Length: 414
Image (cartoon, rainbow, N blue to C red; front, side, top):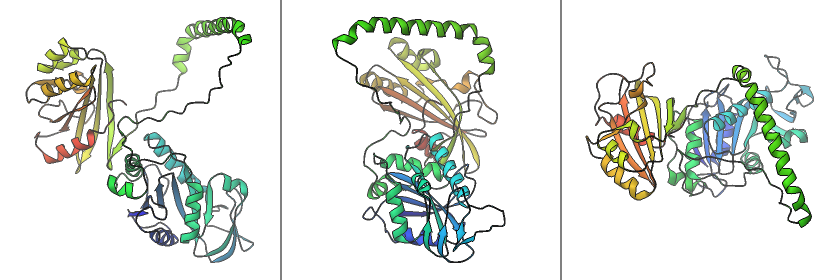
C-alpha cells in the first residue's frame, strides 16, 4: 500500500487509519493499492480521512470520533447508534453518523463516473474510535457494502478484501487516472510504482477509454418449428416501429420544447491538472478546415473524419488554452505522410475552432504562435496546440510545452 498524504485527517481516529494502512508496507505483498490521506475530492461534502484505490475497488474511509471508548457499538445505517446500550447523542441531532459517510461515498462514485474513470466498486468504511471492542451491524447494511469498524490493521485489511471484489484488475494507467480524478491537486504515482502496488501492466489509452456494459442475450432458438413464425415476428416489429415513428414525428415540436437541456461537458483531469471543455465538433470535410500545405495534401487524399476540441486550464495562475485536431486516415502509411508534412514549421495545419468564431470569454483570440505537437497513432494524426489566453506568446515557453504533454491525453470529443 502506497500512502499519499494530501492533508491532515479531519477526525482524531484518522490517525489510527493512517497507522493501520502504513503497517501493510509498500508493494502488493499484503494488499497493494494507493491510499490518499486527508483528501477532499471535488464535489465531496467534506474532507475524507482516506480514499483507498485498490486494484479491485475503491474504499471511502470516513472517521467518526465517539465521545468515549466503547465495548459494544450498535451501528445501523438508518437507525439510532448505541454505545454500550446508551443512545449516541450529537450536537447536530443526527442519530447515525453513517449518513455523512454514505453521502461522501456517493460523491466519490459520481466523480469517478463523471470523469469516465475505471468503473470499480466504490464502498464505505466508517472508522470509529478512540476504541471499540465490538461493532454490531445489520446484515442488510453489510450487504450494501458498508463496514463500521475500529481501524486496526487486521480489521481494515479484512474489510478491504471483502469489499474490493471487481472481477477485473484495474490497470496502472487507469489507476493513475483515478488518483488524478480524486486528488486533482497532487501528482499520481508513476506507472512503475502502480504496477508494484498490484495494478495490472496492461496498456490503456486514457483519452479514448470507454466502458460498455452489454446485456446478456438469450440463445437464439434453432429448432425448425420456430422458423415459420420469424416472418410474422419481423412484420410485427416493423409495424410497431412505423407506428412509433409516426407518433413521434407528429409530436416532435412539443417534445423538443419539453426535453431537458443537455448537461455541460465534464472537466477532464490529467496528471492533477483540470481542463475545462470549451467546444468541440466533427466533420468529414477535413480539407475545408485546414490551411497551407496540410490543406493541399488533404485535398488530394482521403480523410475520413476530422474531430476538433478546445479546453481551458490554468498554469501558475495564468490562463492557457488547448486546441486539438484529430484526423482519421485510411491507414498508417497515409497518416505517416501527413505527419511528415504537418510537423514542418510553416507548412500549415488545421484551423482551431476559435478561428471559426467559437471563442469563449477569457479565451485567446487565436492560436497563432502556439506551442505545437504533431503525433501519430495508427491511422490517426493529432495536432495539439497550446497558447496563453492573454499576453505575449512564446512557442518555446517550457510551461506551455509541459501542458502539451498532458494535453496529448485529452479526448478529441466532449
